Image (tube, rainbow, N blue to C red; front, side):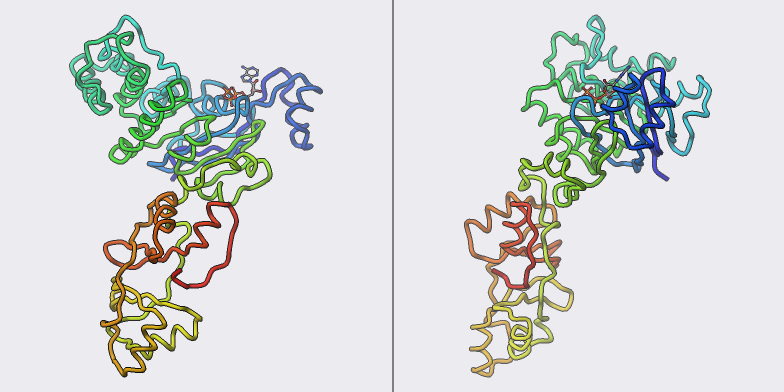
Length: 400
Ligand SMILES: Nc1ncnc2c1ncn2[C@@H]1O[C@H](COP(=O)(O)OP(=O)(O)OP(=O)(O)O)[C@@H](O)[C@H]1O
């Protein structure tokens, strides 16, 4: 069951919501509806679900409806239509008390402007969420301190916000949200006020924290690079509508329409795509079963100038070239061992294209994708170039 399940969620601002909804059904644009009814379409029939432990990013330009959407998710604003389920519970069916409970215990919000109290210490700020839940002092101190330590502020707990840098203040905001130990973190442009370098640091830190804490995170941003960096999946919004939901790779490789394509046009693909997305199934021979003759036959059949060699368990042993194999056949050798070449660069599935590009740029050796020594795939030069330039190519199994 998804932790957050949103269906056909809409928000129309203004007094003529019914009429505006009708126009939406008729396919009128946000602008046309504003002209005709004076109402603003905040969110237009958004449907998505967020799985446990996932970082789901809502991304879009200013005014596309991100903040409205996140406020609908924690029901700070009432939807015009549609439903929000948190852990299978329908927010619309809750009375105020249960709603407050859900907001306090399950959902914690991290804001852009930190929203810290200037006259409270860092520790007192971090324990604020627990304080309003009437958790006793000792326990909330302990929890607040733990979460401050988690974000690397263990030594600053008695300082005041004004004594901390922007990045550190944002950590306090994060620690305050974490002290609640919520299931879901709602992060609304949480890093947008930070300098680019600090921002990147915070993104890294969030990803690192997430490795161990495995929260479900709904992250709002207008920054595409940020979305691509931290999102497991991204929902791209335009004029209140979600125009595409997908992993960063899906969005880059298969943009749903011209808008998305234009949007991602300038992205540095090499930083986002990894070996996994471009690796191909390799042709192999098994060194324990196949000699030069079998290898040669195989290469001729497939039109290859070289072929990978593994053992029966698919552990990568090396590769052999057609020339060497022909020679070995001529000399009636019965083993591939003597002609085995091992100058292969091994990468893992999550090695970035950027790194791979540097490798294939500098060397002519084949690149193999392995995991614990087992051959999972191969990287073909053409695929790297094609992926970086955004086009698809068809490939053969050649090593070059
Ligand atoms: N309270 C409101 N009353 C009327 N219109 C609103 C209200 N809140 C938001 N809107 C409108 O709804 C649309 C979506 O706004 P929203 O703030 O959700 O966008 P956003 O993507 O979060 O933008 P930003 O990044 O600038 O905050 C905009 O056209 C906005 O003008």
